[in-house]
Image 1 (spheres, rainbow, N blue to C red):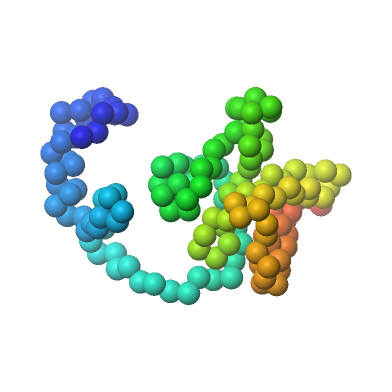
Image 2 (image 1 turned 90 degrees about the horizontal axis):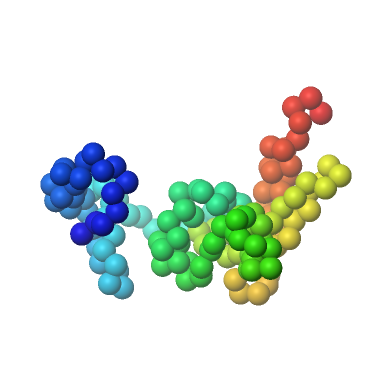
Length: 152
């Protein structure tokens, strides 16, 4: 039963809507957690792309902290409002996704027109893979291009 009321005007409709959703959505229980998805979606396993992505703290992959921890077995927290002395990841740590796993985080700042990146890894070190280094550099290039003033 849901207890939060983000839209109190729908309180009387919530239980019926939840029953209908449970009837129409596909579901599976994995390690005691019930997961739902549109019945028309087909789960297909594929080889992950050799891609590095820096995710914004409010990216759909990240914002549901409980789901994030279930998927990647580590706790990500947005610490911009946490006192500096209590931060573990950094002021604006962005989760670092390699292939299909979130393996760490990056704190990136622009200093004198260049990116200054401080990386952390859940395992304690970066993957020992030439493709990872190449794709990390490519992601930083995309970020630099995004941050570059339009008239530069």
